[in-house]
Length: 187
Image 1 (tube, helix red, strand yellow):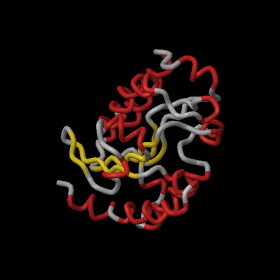
Image 2 (cartoon, one colour):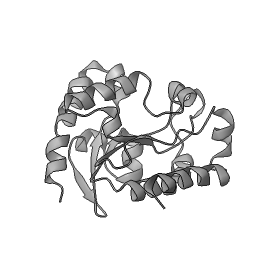
Image 3 (cartoon, one colour):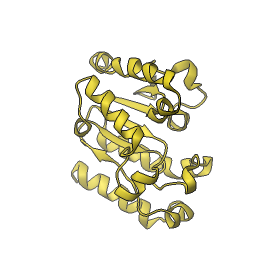
Image 4 (cartoon, helix red, strand yellow):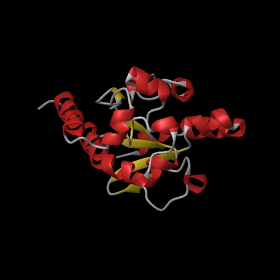
């Protein structure tokens, strides 16, 4: 089975197993992931927002525009990387994903990562970091690569944080600037 077929099967499994039916019922569609399935880096957010739900793609709203700018700042384009979320359906009123929703989707996220096999997983925000690097505080570890169970992770603040708090913008840009060097150092 090809990588794309494997990812399609994971997506089909989420629908067939009716994961988080209440979220599915209040969403337009499943937002699985987007980008280069052979990428060395995968970015993981928390859950789709309104624009993502309507378009079926992750990070297409204001936070996505800022993510695209930061990618360009390190010489990458959106189509060079893979972008997904832990939770694949939009929570009502853009609320934070609930712990049981994140747990329900985590096996599918892990399966996605297993297929893509990135050198680096960048978590965007505390929700995705908590799921993959439990027990850490993003304010203390952002921008610092962590190796956990054989995978290298880079906790980053969520791009939306910079939209609400201008002082976070430079922090995110600075953390992002470390990505090429981190990728080069991963064996």
